[in-house]
Image (cartoon, rainbow, N blue to C red; front, side, top):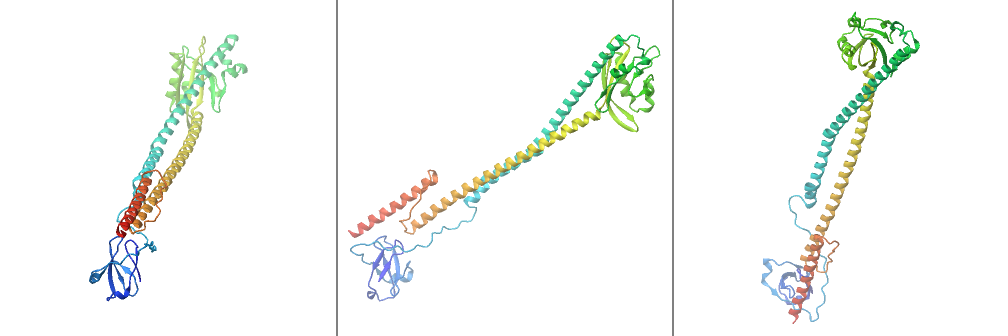
Length: 375
């Protein structure tokens, strides 16, 4: 009858007729461990207290043959409560990274981008207003020079005929944009009246401009700009003007006609500039939103790619550690011919090499003990 050591797998031949009991205990000559076996079936098992009544040391065959390798049960590691290596890797590496990315995205979208949009819009608005005001002021001065040149070349032209002379009228009254225009008025004489002599509204020609006070609630702002040329050459400012029951905001620039008692003015509806600013603001916001969306997509893809790489590398590392743990368990059960794969040059590769050296050392030690027993 053949019996096999349950510890190292060494096989022995025994005569069952020499046993008086159905179950006995034997000591392996290779590993020195005790194991129990049944007389009838020959199956072996770890010894118990009931197997202490018979002790047998089986004789090893003269020519030791390698024992047939019995299939070992699958190596299982004891389950520990808690988070595994993959869970810890996700908890302490990926989640903090994603939290930082989410915080960065929130700060960028809720704080940085609105602030940039506001600053860009304000800067562009100020730039447009500065450019438009400079353009209107230059238009006023240019018109004043043209009026002066025409008046000096036509000394017989009197103020009452300004709005009747078609050539002078083309110079004094010019359209600017959709609603803007230039006009001509006279500094007050001994009577103290400010009169308009060239205007897009014929009913105002030759009239006292102060009479407009009755129909304009914000007449003071208009009058301050109009009369500022008494003490200086040019003036500018904003005022509100009611026309046909609708109030609108206007910008006016005035300039003296040098050498004459006349003043050239330029009136321009501020809504036209506001429309240009609104258009620029909308385009700026569109560009900002597109930039924000592109940034979100890039950062989101970057975070997803980083998380995928983290998870992939973490799973690969965990699988290698689980493999080495399984190899160590199988070596502990006596499976010394198992191959230890060393597929990397990092710390896990060093661990695999250490397990391989341990397996070789155990094999050498068992072989040395076997030879010693044979001698």
